[in-house]
Length: 400
Ligand code: PLP
Image 1 (cartoon, helix red, strand yellow):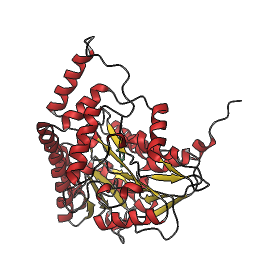
Image 2: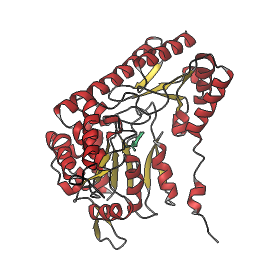
Image 3: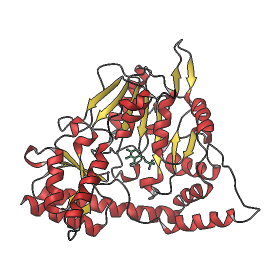
Image 4: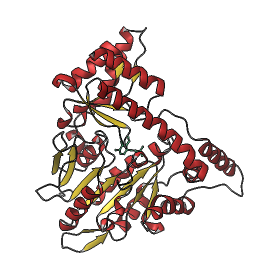
């Protein structure tokens, strides 16, 4: 008898985005003349930068010639990309890393799921509420029941303080999906300190790093002294350079970072991750890595930043226009996410229904990210400028 992994049956139905899609489809079926605008999805809308396209074409041509053809890649990633990452993302910010501490992958989603496998089932895991749902589901799949939710509410400005109890693994996401908040240097210092005192590990998800506007906000957790001993950092080209369909990312697993055996012996996570990747991951594609490398040329930096500027202007527009008419709005600065407090204490799904049925605008109900998201609504800055304006105008008209 083939028994299923029962852990999978402990997952709650992933109904958030499917319910959003079902409701939208139903509305469109009943209202074929209405144009629905979505500020709901976390996917980019602008095409890839020209330098990226050019680099991909060149890499494809290399694949067509016997002399330059590439087969299986290197699991860790090609040096040409890792060296650019070390220089541009880290050295510039005073962080020195070795080449074998950076692992190229095909999107942070897989890395964030994979890293959890390196730790035993009985670890206590701290997650924020609301949270990017993949962190929670990955741990449930691994049979972990010890999930501690740290409430991110208006009272604590959506940045929960250090837990009173002991936890072993902490997921931090900054800039945050869904609340749009960013962690300050002081807050990161406190987390690093806590992790050191508790022999805990931080998974630092910074896939929205490129949106950080404020020079006082760290771009990497390794800007904090001692962080290399306690943190794995996840970065992605998905939002940085519009690679959601291309798939490229990297994880930093410093060699100083250790976890423990039951007998107290220290184990280097870098070697464990390398072992895991070489068994389970087939390396990111050569063409993709050449595309990512192009992002680090001067022209590449200029072009991707133009796209980010476009999304940031959308975020600013949504935030400012909604605030003008009395909405309470969080996020939207150093972040592509706007975390809107629903008016008059409306439930997240009621607000969703009202927006869809009366304004043909789609967003994401905050409660879908956790109980503390009830009464909130996530809007994203990733649509076109025109659609963003139109959607905001419609929302404003609805609540005038
Ligand atoms: N982490 C967060 C917080 C995200 O919002 C996303 C994607 O939306 C990811 C990770 C995954 O990114 P990637 O496209 O690199 O897999």
